[in-house]
Image (cartoon, rainbow over all chains, first blue to last red; front, side, top):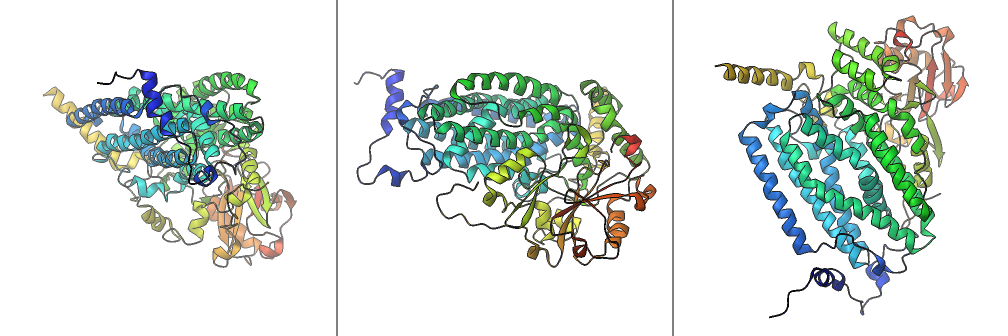
Length: 504
Length: 119
């Protein structure tokens, strides 16, 4: 019998030794996408795999995690775990997650499958293959975990259809499509480095800690199940960047520009997370501002200090993100409150205690700029005129978010940026989004902007009910204010019933 | 700059004026009234008189704001595509120089939102 291989031999046999030198075809024909972006790789053998994980070990780890997760999901369902969350408003954060984030995990799965095929190096191929499988597992487990809520709450029933159609979901959708339609090196810089390494803590931490704080043990368990994968993805992100930067000095300016672009795109996408943290969690974990300070300003700052020796600086416009931290969540939530009739989750005004929390966390902005607006809306609602914006918003051509961001020197003033390309006007929410467009205008002129598509007659009709119908969004059930929702009525009924059960 | 691609990249602008069934897109923003979270986008006939834009379109869009009925339209400061602008109320949008995807902004001196907050 052959002697068992040690770990290192096994790793080499099961990864590096899978590569071979082709003899029938030149490598350039087998890997046609590898040169056009301008990235120069001298030696793929220098790719370091810090985990040295082989496929057989990978399957074992993942299977063990799946067993634990599904045991928890089953017990959550059997014990009516949904009744233990802090408040039914919390469930709206899950609606946003399932419609906005889970399909993006699937996009990441497809993207890593494609770049794994595109890279000639075996180390990179194996790393991408594992991440592709991870992402597929994430979307599956998210759908399974959250499907329990679909039995009791509105808004979950058609998340995949909504992802392709609903106006604000074009923001994460177009983000991933931008990455998937780039070359393999840009894709992996965008997703593995800028998103996974620099920004993922700001996506996962708020949702998973939010779940823990709000009694959603099923989602917490999903989070734990994904966490070890995320650690591997982050490590891959850093490895990818260092590998490209070490291979050739010509790569540095290309990689820097991608970091600039994808930091800004990722940061704009995180507007949704900012409002979730500050407004949608009945029990809050930390403010968006605190999270940005900890995860970007401190951790991100240290990362870019470390990368300085490769010639990489902080992403362009990072200062703007720091200036905006006092405003981002309020402006985003106010936008969803404006368009609560066209959102697949409920919106509401914070109560007095929550406003006190916001004022304490945002002493430089909340009472001055946002409280008066909210108090007016609350008074309007009490008088029977819950405010909804009757017009459709102007969107940024790049990030596709309504032009809601204001000038940090004057927070009452919307930022307007524009350019012309081939005689046509294009508008942007920021210098960051304008720069991205101007670098590749051919790409962004074809953006599927939901508001313009409605006016062109491609979204089911010209009226809001027709468009909602085309979204598969049930007017009066999935949308509008939480105050009048079925979710709230049911929740109050269930809580009353369960408290009566406890007292008898 | 232009896109790097493996093939001739087709240029397909999705929002040219022909796509809008005879209308043109117009973007409108009321400065310092962020109760309306962002500027708005409207498909409008190019021949629509500017006065009708003010009387009908803006009333529908912004009439819910307590400042709206207090606007003295003779004192409103207009901007078209970033430049100060004096509209001719009887002329149509196109004859006022308002093109497809132009941005019209207006500022209402003395009225700066709910409790002066810019909302």
